[in-house]
Length: 263
Image (cartoon, rainbow, N blue to C red):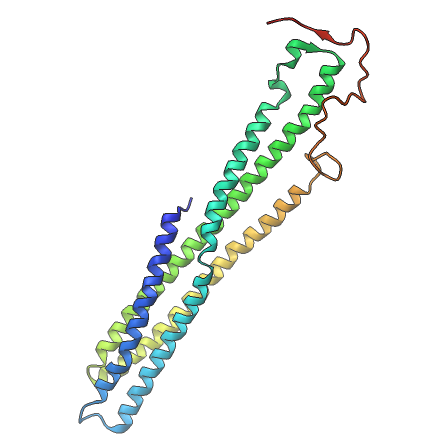
């Protein structure tokens, strides 16, 4: 199960990484200017170095914008985790009710026998079944939320790795601007990294969407179970009738009920 501490740490690390990346991008232009400020760098070469530096900044900025967009949904898994805990509490309450209402666990027959007792037990069984269904649905909902939160954690961890990789490439590229020759190698490295990292981001998004798509289908199934009248036998698929005094199918006559004074 994903803890809130794990998830928040992953998101905080990613946000810090984006700040570091933005700072490194600001160093590219000055480094390029410094690389062209030599007597042996002719105007044509200088223009190309500046052009490549601008391209590096453009690619890095696009990656930053994409990550910033993806971070907008970072709060959702926090709600998923807390809500999953709420659903687990509901499961505990519902299964507890179902356990206490099992006819075989009731002691009514020790003190009350006859048509009235039979009608009472008949009315109790649907209550236990309905409570058990609520418990099952709560458990499935909680598990689905946990799976989604776990997928989100993996997703943002993957984004964090991508940011770190790109920062490393930027640092190497900025260092490469020390000479005009190495400037070309540094720019080429950034162009390659930008393409690779963009592909990795798309891959991470695709993996996340695959998990969320599967969970969306699970939620549709849960909705179908909620509308299933098998356990909810009341009018219109509502909670079963709890009127234990309804003896329409068991008319009590004199002598039908045998009251015991045991215990």
